[in-house]
Each structure stands twice: as structure tokens, then as C-alpha cells.
Length: 181
Image (cartoon, rainbow, N blue to C red; front, side):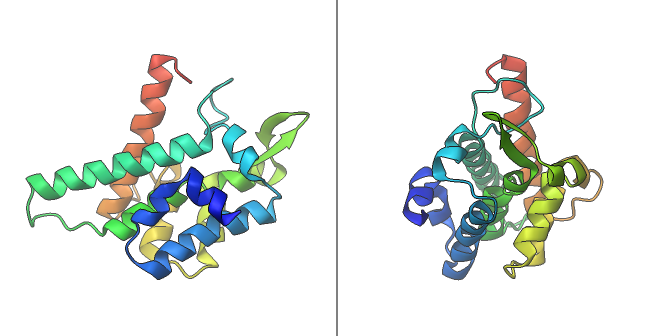
């Protein structure tokens, strides 16, 4: 399953710190295992349940948010040389993991993805950060996961968390406005 996941989401390999890269991969694999998701499920799992009949899956969305986050960081570093410090490994790990909680928030019922019982109580930023905590990630990455959505409004405390939040909403809002969901 690892090989298939890396084939679907090659951006894991952008994380330079080998230990952090491995933990980030393992979080996805263990979340899939815990909820009995297969690779095919990821390819069919919608990136959101807020928009009906979206054709964008969680893999496409995760990759887009990760790449947008990286490009934002590159521009900020280039244009504000030395004035803003960005930990790219934390940024990448946080972006790759920002929606891993959806593996707990969703379930498949009668061929459709719907909110799980857990998902009705805990949205994905909370369940994702709680699950990732078990793997010993730095608190800054847990913060990115927990604060990337509305739960983090007014609470984002790192540059990396702000970038991932905005990259996530640029993707969501753009697709929603364009009707391409």
C-alpha cells in the first residue's frame, strides 16, 4: 500500500527530513488501515462533503493544497528575502496531512461517502491532529492540521499554518465559484 500511496501523492518525497517524511507517510497509511480504506477509496473519496457531487477527490485536493503552499512559500521567501522564516518541511508535512482526518470523518454507506458517527462529533482538523499526535510530530505541524480550517480562525500562530489555511481555501473557493466541483 505504501508504494501505491507514494505513487498517488509523490509530494511526500519533497520533505527533506527523512524521519518526518516517514512519519507523514505512516500517518496516512495507519489512518487508512484503522478505517479500512483502500487506495481506490482515496481516488473516489470527495475532498469535501459540503459540495454535492464533487468530482475532485481527496488526493487531488491534498496535492493541490500542498503544491500551492509550496509556491506561496517560495514567493514569500524570494520577495521578502530574510524577513520571513518558513520551515518548508513543516509546511509540506502539514499540507500533506491537513485533511487526513477526513479518513475518520467519512464513511461509505450504500455506495456514498457520508459523515461517520465520529465525523458528526469531531471535524477532520481535530481528529486529524489528534491522530497525528500519536506519531510524535512537532507541535507546529499538529497546529497546521488543527488550525487549517474554520476551527483555526483567530488561532493561527505560525507562518506555515497561515499558508496552508489560505492554500486550502483558495482551492475550495476557486472550485466552488467555477462550478468545477
